[in-house]
Length: 278
Image 1 (cartoon, helix red, strand yellow):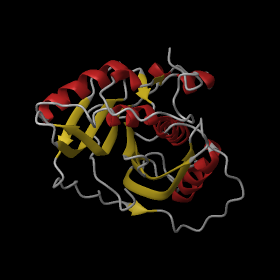
Image 2 (spheres, rainbow, N blue to C red):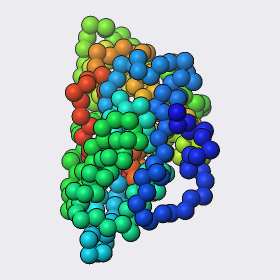
Image 3 (cartoon, helix red, strand yellow):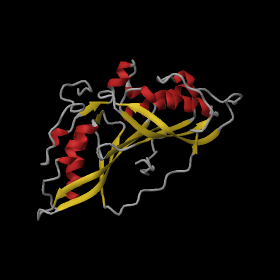
Image 4 (spheres, rainbow, N blue to C red):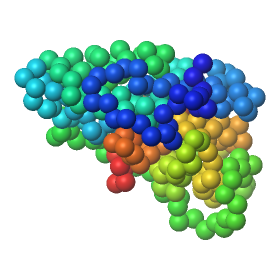
């Protein structure tokens, strides 16, 4: 089973940038690893979803040797047993740079095959032309200006609570966002910045407690996907909403951004919009 602590993990190590196609560069990591450390079996968790990756530096050669450039959208199912380590993903995409392919459909099919094998589930790949327009950002209420005080920056789910006087049978339908999301890579310690979108239906959750929770992630070390899953789990178990979706839009690094979405709704599809920082 691939582990974040494996010696073959390329993250945090000097790497040669190979520009001829090589699928072996992909490094899968078990999604269950961090949950097992917490004593929880991941397959028992009450969420569905996907990880939406955007690649902004996609290139290959056509059959005449002329460079082609594009963007790409990758959708990895949350039910797949493995996530793909981001540096290995970048190295893999770079390996297309000096390789000839007949057309973009051939590139898509090759990427689908390789990424699905690495993730252990069906990955969707769409090559996007450079004139592609991303969908609009959904309407939300930003909670970043709420009046809170912080002196600790370690993950603390106990800060989450229902609004004072909230009745359990009074149902609200709310869409919130905080742009203060920051977590750290569990291998290198480098900061990962992003925006966190929280959509829920149920008893009114205290917005100050949600903001306090988001800020408490500031020194938390975990991969993007696992930070979103932990946030979903903490809100779900502490506040007990009827429905919940947590969606992070992380700032790109190395030509890739990673945007995990977890939802209690199995039919929920992540809208691949872009924030100003992406």
